[in-house]
Image 1 (cartoon, rainbow, N blue to C red):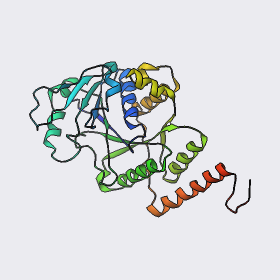
Image 2 (cartoon, helix red, strand yellow):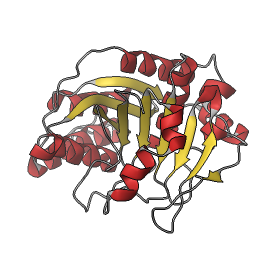
Image 3 (cartoon, one colour):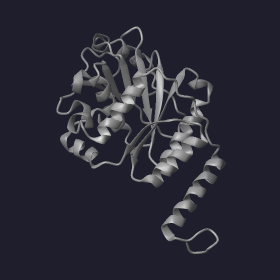
Length: 278
């Protein structure tokens, strides 16, 4: 492991495109010549599927910490994929330390480690125990209320003592399908004094890349979506500090959601709140 390796932790509600974002950012950073390691925590090993393509995953050699052996495979642009199978997301940290110091990882000597972290909002959020050195958290969301609720919980965690050593990397807005949805997320971000670092529109090219079993950086390198991931990679490489967000109390978030529900209903039905037709 290098003297300083930065850890980029992606978190968000399931289905918002967190794994797609993590894999494509890994590819975009690796494309610049950086050595990038992607850690996936999905027991099915799906986090790195597009990054490794047809590459076969193999057990990490000489693994001696527990019965569940992490798997690895080379990824595009000389990146490296490791699927932990949920081994090190919480609990005993000894396998974590062992994996960080395993010859496979130290020999690769990554500049960045990207973490695709699953999280159940019913449980307290904790960073993966595997992180060492600098840690930057990026929240991935869509305009779906459930996704925004999860991001708000993450923002609440960022305002606790447990998060004091974790930098905020910004909000990645994914799967946007129109100006209305952009406005919804932009309003929430403004309410919490957060920063949007990437805005990725809904695109059929994401499905195309899934069929090819590749990242968009490979399957559609000149697409607007691939360009958005490359822009995010450039921001990650810059030393700019992103301010730590505030969060909305539950009753305030509920009021905010009702406000947007009324706006959407008015636009859909043509009826304003006093009952008059538009």
